[in-house]
Length: 314
Image 1 (cartoon, rainbow, N blue to C red):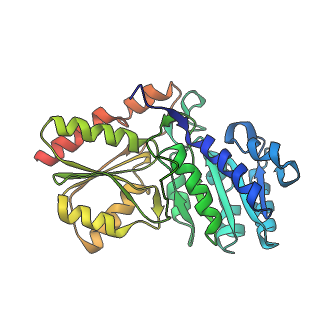
Image 2 (image 1 turned 60 degrees about the horizontal axis):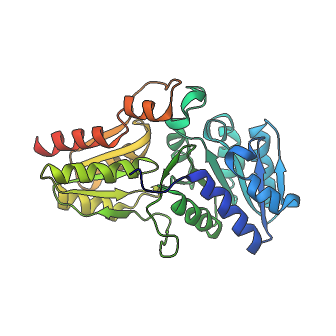
């Protein structure tokens, strides 16, 4: 995919905020001294009177965002995923989730692809934490185009939203002029009948490549982009289970509590189906180049294809 344009999803986040700010004067953006990294600096440069640097005090930032939302504003609060979902969890749960306030959390630098920053900054648990909060929408876009559309859809949604964006550039395969995003709806990237692969975030591109590898090996794989982890698109999962018979889930997240377990929970209750989960096992990450870490943990097209082929033929 060397000839495909690559853009980090966090860039899509920043661009969407700037575009939204030009249309809606009720948007305020909070950041925890990371505006250059989270890309909220784009909004801050355009609308400095509506952009607030709360310093390295993520809990305070979430409380301030909740306060702004309580006064009728639509508040976006941003930091690295480790701090937005991890350090500030209590404030997110009680000040935003429990109250149902209109706060949109934009968490960048999620997953193992944070790379050299190491285990302390590689948040592999954010889907789990945010899924557990009643009423919280949880999403992770596949590319920068989907990220922009997601941020704008979050504005229209009344209530708390958690969005995870990545540090590394990823292939752009959506057309901004024609793409439509809807919260809670999956997207079939490739049709297939032998096995279904459900992925989100940067692993969607890897799953698409895995689908091509499987086709070369005589297997028809359905590839599904599940950008919304909660609420899960039950229809697309159940259809995949009925029509493909076996499912592989892929996420740049722990296999505990994320997309894979959301899919398994649904299927165990409504249509028992064999599933294999690809994600990080019950371990912390470690420092290293992003590409090398993704390969080491099996979060790459070659391993997805290997697991899917062995599973489909078993």
